[in-house]
Length: 184
Image 1 (cartoon, rainbow, N blue to C red):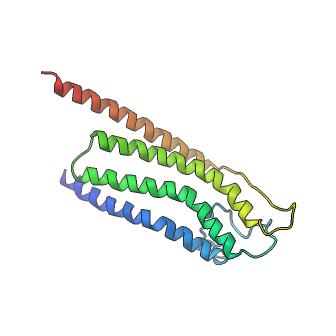
Image 2: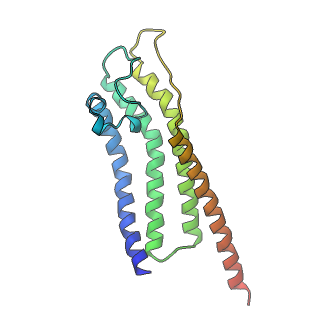
Image 3: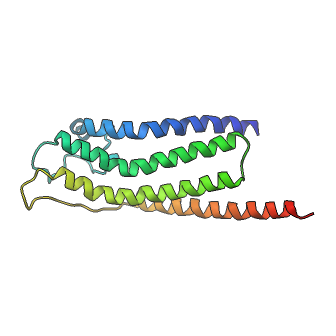
């Protein structure tokens, strides 16, 4: 049990760092937007909701207004990811205390599944918003809204559903155990 508790404390720290790093990485990606897209090894464009390279539909340079709006838009799924990391940190805090199959830990697992699903839904909304922001300085009639979904989004959505289902099963097992403990 002590190995699980020790590992849980470490993982809690990792997820707390993750909570702080999400807005930092999004901010850096948008501040250095031009350099990020020009250097593929350090490409954050999928994180920002973009594909490789300068979007061909942009008429001019990326302004600071576009960067600020892009950051705000990318933080929609980013906020859901931060919430997921925060729930993971709290879950591993519970595990560190030896609370494995409690109502609180099962509820956190359910919230993690919901956060994974919410992240995917918000990523679908992020794409059209980012493309609209990046074309906001284009002449009238040349604004573009893109919509897309990839296999990674589908797999992560399925993973979210599986996590929710697992939490439901764990909650039923917890209830049965509590009922058995009450029977004399």
